[in-house]
Length: 248
Ligand code: G3P
Ligand code: CA
Image (tube, rainbow, N blue to C red; front, side, top):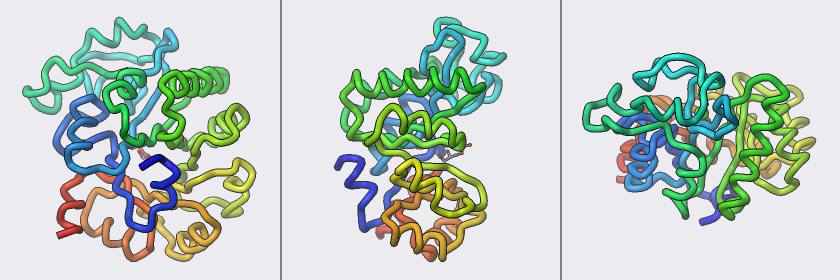
């Protein structure tokens, strides 16, 4: 299925948060391939710029939490970042795993739909990041299988100014106000509310206006149940075994 089909799907869309995060080190190639094997419909991943402009897949701005390195990646080259192990912190079985580039993810998963979250910094870098991400997607012919999202709505505006049709979604905490102005202005495809503040009325209105609603981050069965009751289009979740349980 292409990204537009997932955006319009009738059934709940299961989106693997940072890959199969409960079984593998987050945002790594093992986590992504495992998520596909576990039946994820789409994979969410975080993309940011290294100091040399390389596009790396990493949630945090620094290396400490998910590698054996230290420091801000914005001060490092890709070669420096690749010296560090991004797997052993999770389990020794993953020793030797490195932080992947967006390029590698697109090569490793040539058919999977990806929700690429743009992690941005200062404004001038935001525009460079957006241009670079779009360039990478186009080089791989992947525009039909990606959904770009961000908490940084200026980054979403930059995407839309450069590409009138690529799938785009706004991440937010709480509520957007006025609820649909941003979505109309930027011609968004999806809205991504946090699960703690999920409002069933907002979900219904958003879907009625043609927006997919992807809630983040489902970390418990109770949260999944709230999402199902609210009628969301999809869930961004840590544990993909919930999908097996839900369909059995
Ligand atoms: O895309 C949803 C979710 O990933 C946003 O939060 O902090 O996990 O990137 P975070
Ligand atoms: Ca994310």
